Image 1 (cartoon, rainbow, N blue to C red):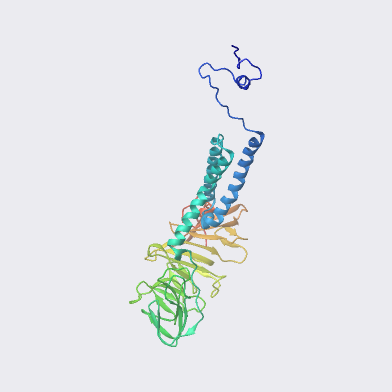
Image 2: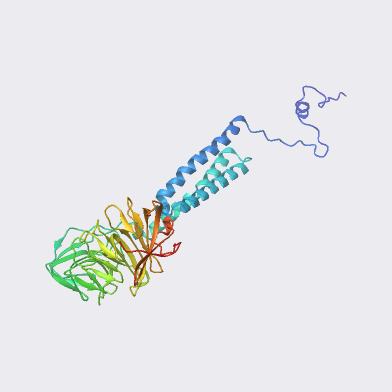
Length: 405
């Protein structure tokens, strides 16, 4: 009987397959080896990295400008924070792409791209959720209709206007709300608490209890003489419309108000500040009823100040008025910008600007203290730009008496 040796036969398929692998004594069955990455896959890795980086940068910039709104207003620290987060997320994406090198190319690219876009997908889902649950927050304010004469009395902000007044209504919206008056005006004065007004309207972008009113005449509100100016409303807050007690938010002064050593001229803007305080601002270029104002024995052409609830001075700053050179003690200030004034916590006034002393040496800061015998001048150190007007001390040197100029 003849025996055929299939193993030693050179043309046998089994002999050809066995010669491809090195014999393994522990595991006679050879393991299937993975084919190495081809040249296309090697070239695709750096190309994908460049694509991820190029695609992430425009998305970050767009999020900074569009999606985040006023984030850029935070300044350099805010931008550094968002760029650091974006860079860290991009590095994590590249790390994930490297860890998935044994996965199929299509799955590797899809997973890396989805991981990169995850923050933007989350923002889109969050925006859509709030847009569906809080539609009012994403709907622009309704425009108002044209003025028309009403046949019935109209109430707005606690003031009831008689029939024959002119009223503008809010346009109907998509939320099912009834139309409400947006602005009402009349030829005759109408009572709003203890005030007398001729017109009232809702403040665009303000709270629901904030209104702009046109006074019938100059009136005192919370101790401030407010002017009845047609081109600038007096802003009031009315919390209870059934028993209105208007609270002043802002107005323009009808006459000069002197607080301590500062005389605030007419047309000064008064605004309610924090903790019951007040902020005042006046500028000759904008409010030109007077050419200059008086503050701490200086002539100024602009100034602003903060006062507490008891009208105690908290901070004050202004610009010195003068054509050409202005002398403060033995220092002559001149040029542009005009010398700046700032009140300090010790009662002195700091004058800073470009000046020279009698010897011709540069001098950029003089502190003025007012005493019973007259003003005393001393050199000081000009503060940094972010400390100007903060009321901090910065004097250096000895006090020198000099006549006032």
